[in-house]
Length: 392
Image (cartoon, rainbow, N blue to C red; front, side, top):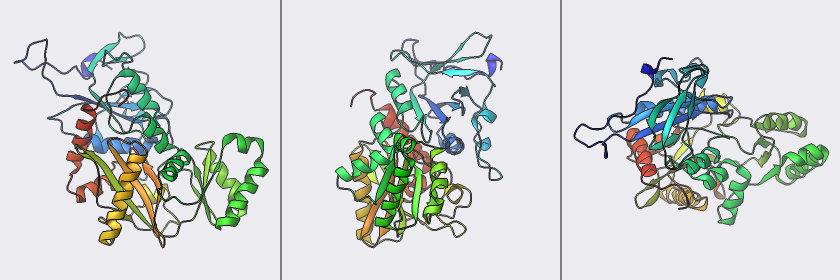
């Protein structure tokens, strides 16, 4: 790729001196990644690139390929959508098959550099804030957040601890329980436990099923987008479900069936603290037995916004959503997912970087709460710009 096609450093305003240049903040939108949620991350980033105010921000799209290469990508949201039931990928968007983007590692330098084999590296200018649109491990789990903390670069969303807790469903539930939030029955099978004694692990799951009944849901402990989840109706299907979950994560979570309505609530950090959106209800997709990946992204039906709840139920789920945000020390945003059972609300999980696709519930809930999609993106970027890195 020729150097004239590379993004250039933002130019100083002509009325400003060279010592204090006036320029738009530069936002690096980072997406893709090494997890199984790579494609959904690309779709999410496309929606953000489409919505971000280009008169207010200079934007640098950076995609991470499935093998971990940081690539300079086309700023082309139209190519970042689900087409013919296929999710997009970074390799198809990359400007070069082997060029790489290097983020700064020195807290005193925010210069991003692009290089290709046999070419002189080129500075792409400073990055003021990163919008990490990554889902799943190697991005949403605190790893990227730790890199940005070391670099001293502000970023949108939860910090290292909250991101890690929000990704690991076992420790998320442990934190919720310690703060008195209601969670459903669950069981964890760790990698060493399965590797050393599979029969013992199966017995443990059978005992759990004896206590809570079939069906069970077997899922990766550190995954999202409903990938790797299997509904198991009897002991016969258990090994296959475990194998499928372990394709995504060697640690698995087993949950009992919670009978109830699926309700979500968004949390957004304002100047005076976190606030909850109106909740939404996820209606069952008739062609699917449960809310799996295809039901969520391919064959989805519109969510009901706002959810048909009583005022008391709405106030309760909003309180619980904010409590979950605070319990996990989140920042910026969270989508909290609940089941409304006969006994009341049970929190299933939080998502520290929820989807921003056109059909995603988080932006829809805030739209219904009076915060438009572009304003939502702007609020998140501004909050990150105003927040320091490091201990806070």
